[in-house]
Amino acid sequence: MVTLNPQIIKIPAFMTKFIDVDNLTTFQKVKLIIKGKLTTTVFKTFSEKNITLFLNTFFKFDGKLVFDENRYIKISENKSKQLNYPNLRVTRVLLNEKEFLNHLFVSYLLNIPNFKTGDKVLDCGANVGELFLAFENLNINIDYLGFEPDPNVFECLNLNTEKSNYNCALSNRKEEVDFYIDSSGGNSSIYESSETELKTKVEARLLDEFIKNEKIKLLKIDAEGYELEVLLGGEDNLHNISYISVDCGAEKGMSQETTFVEVNNYLTSKNFEIIAINEKRLVCLYKNKND
Image (cartoon, rainbow, N blue to C red; front, side):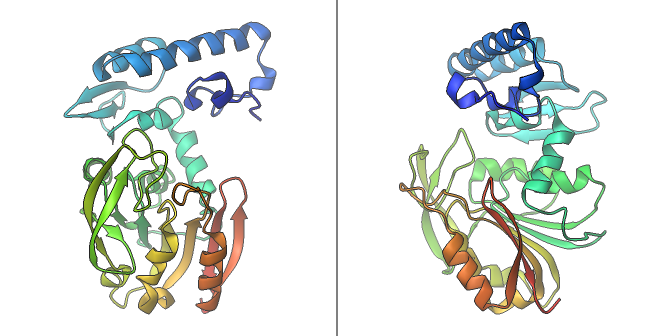
């Protein structure tokens, strides 16, 4: 259990994610804080290439980190695997890659369904494809399709999954929409928020376009407050989906509202039942009652 709050002491969260801080000695805690503050300073002031040099020098992890073609690339020790990120979210998989991916899998409550080879998984708000990597980490060979509106993030998604995904937003209307980008984190959305750094135009499409009378084992939605609209765009084919994992957390717009009530009411009306909740993130897992 980690009680040291990296937000309060201003050190990167990846440094404490899988550490039992309570059992560190006083010396170890002081050392962690000093190293954390130094790392924060480096992240704020150094160029990307110098950041990778710092991380390679002062942190121990499998392989090495490089910055090339405008993205961070974590290369495994035997060069058999590369993970691509457009920003410093790469630190999520830097020190404890397998532990993080398993944590991500469980955070979406995906340890509950029984997945098997060939299951179709749709990933809305795919970012760089960490969900695909989490399945891969568990040696589950799924039929994966990701949707990611941010063009820079989308490039990394395709590289990480080695698949042809869709560079679009999912919505309840087919149109061109404003898309607000958080280029340093993972809070990009059709809704503007305090994390917004850039604005661009993206294509919005309907989920119904991508479900052609086929069985979908899982639809995962993490749309930063746009979850209901994603579901409405798939209304004609929701009956083909066995499980839906939805991040309903407080991420909608400037007021950072949750979407739990509207999402829960809608899915309940569509013959889904909620079978589990991750209260820490307000992720909800729904099951089709007809399955």
